[in-house]
Length: 217
Image 1: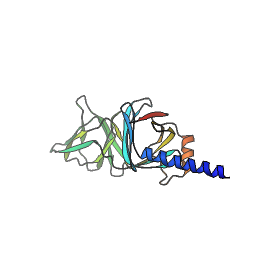
Image 2: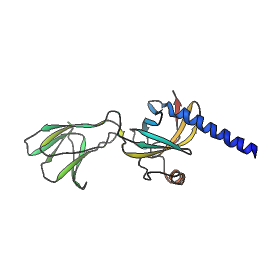
Image 3: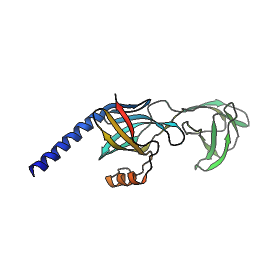
C-alpha cells in the first residue's frame, strides 16, 4: 500500500515538473516552432498532407492527460489585409489571387479567377455582402464589402487559425524534446473530456503530420 502511494506521488510530482517545463519553453523542428509561455501558446507548423502550406495560431492552452487543448484566439502575428479604393466604375475590381462572392447569408453567388496580374472583376450588384479570397498555400481571407469600392488584398502565405479549438496528442516529452501529433484544428466540444479526446485519437487521421519531434531551445 505504501509503495503504491509512493509511486502515485512520484508520478504526480513528475507530471507537475513536466508541466512546468512545457509552460515556459520553445520547441523547434527546422523552421517550425511551438512556443509555450505561462498559459499561452503560439506556433507555426508546416503541413505536408499532399500539398505543403504553413499553419499559424496563438491563444491559450491546457493539458488533459496526454493531450494539449488549444483555444485559438485572434492571431497576434501578421494577417491578411485589404484596402478600400474609391471607385465609380460599373465593375468592382479586386487585386487578388482567386475569389468567390457570397450574400449576407453566406450563400455562394458567383466566383471568378484572377488574371496573370492578380486582378479579378465582378459586376456591381446590391445582393453581395462578403468576399472570400482563396489561394492554395495562402490564408483563406473573408471580409464584408460594398461594390462602391475596388479592393487591394494582401494575402499571407500561411493559413491563420482563429476562434477554433485545436487538439494535439503528446506522444512523448522530456527535458529536451516534445513529440506531437496534430489531431484537429476545429474540435467542437467546448469543454472536452478524456473520452472525447480518446475517441478523436482513434478516429482522426493526422491532419498535417504524424509524430513530429520538436527540440527544446
